[in-house]
Image 1 (cartoon, one colour):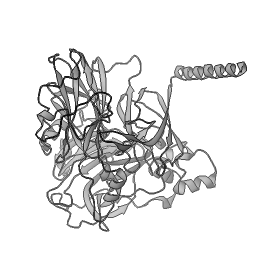
Image 2 (cartoon, one colour):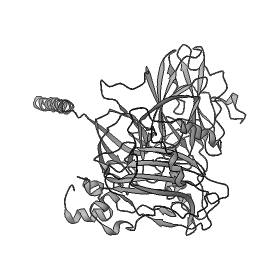
Image 3 (cartoon, helix red, strand yellow):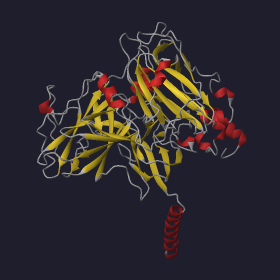
Image 4 (cartoon, one colour):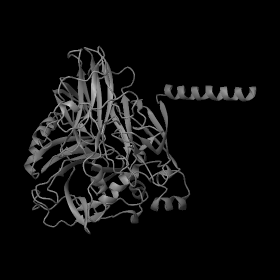
Length: 580
């Protein structure tokens, strides 16, 4: 027994020494173990089945420093479905196989299997992670990922403490039923969410601010310890707080406000922006912000923190919590009216906020010229009677073989080898429903050479119904890009003269407004296969995405378990090797 204890002590000491030595060598490895499983939670005061991690919803917060390596062992404890996790905003330099996109960067992780995500976080900022298989993000598979500056470095703004808020939406219908409805004839839309959540908590059948509402919803009366009770933001007077906000919504565009307080925006998608002051912020699915809040109001009152729906006609009650000045009890409700969410269809207000965002001095500058330009027309269509979303008349249907391995090993039968359409007809009228509503299913790829500078023009259009054009937030994996400009109507060549090449925001998610266009520029400097898609969950499920591939032959050492399916799985069996 003594010998066993000695061996165990030696193991502990050696593990400690190994960890410390890796830190001395300049690389700290942070290890996490994630078990993905379904759990019961009273998310909005009613019990639901939620997809959680290690019994938690939302999943555990990951915190690291820029330059650290994360090693997350993810075990799929779901009984009957695969899973993956995407690390939203992390560029995955040198590890494209760890991006966490089923059928693009890896095979889905089967029930009972464990997959190791190992990658470096190279830039400080506000990130998050979420499921990227089916509509698992909507089922609750998400959490925060915060990357701090290395020790000794300082942010370009001062704050005393910080809060971290994950904003999401919630349905009482399961994602499996939603997926079936979206893929049925007749089509069944998922509808508006029943509840908005702040850090995984909301209230469906009551409201903290009921007395200020005319809906007849009853007042919430929490006794303490309820799973759905809001997380209070406790503050001290005359301090400055950084509030990190990320939207992981499946559908809703949101507006965030704190009554009687101004907000200073300092970060967007983990990149610094020139600070500007607002009363509230619009935040779209896939975006993150840091705002500064100074607690200079009457310390003998509490104040509302509000999240409401924008961009769609709302049928969902505001999510509320309380900013509690700790000079009084957190149980004292604010006496002021609720912050008023701007009209859902006041897009001019939304555009005005978006156009205030410009890069802070010192942010990487865009190349002055691009090598290539592609146009991506966003339309709603029909394919064999099914309603789909399409890009340049092609609705994306992912193949069973991951693109990363298929391109790396030149497996011709894995996906459509024909070049993906890089434009749309000049005479296409974006202001009316498509004259020919029919489109096709496809899984082709946009191929780029390493180092190419690519301009992407996202063009919005009318949907199948008359006078209907929706907001679409687009997220690019593996890159940040420069947002060069926004415009009304159909993009014209002379619009390039309006491009902001001086201080364009550097982001990973960008919105296109109804009947408008958005222009972005990125450099194809990260070998891999990368998703570029609408971040609205049902829209992606209905085909609203494309795949970019750049210099995949330069990718090294793809773990075999990332490719153990489809044609790459057969290729690995034949070659019988571990890495390529």
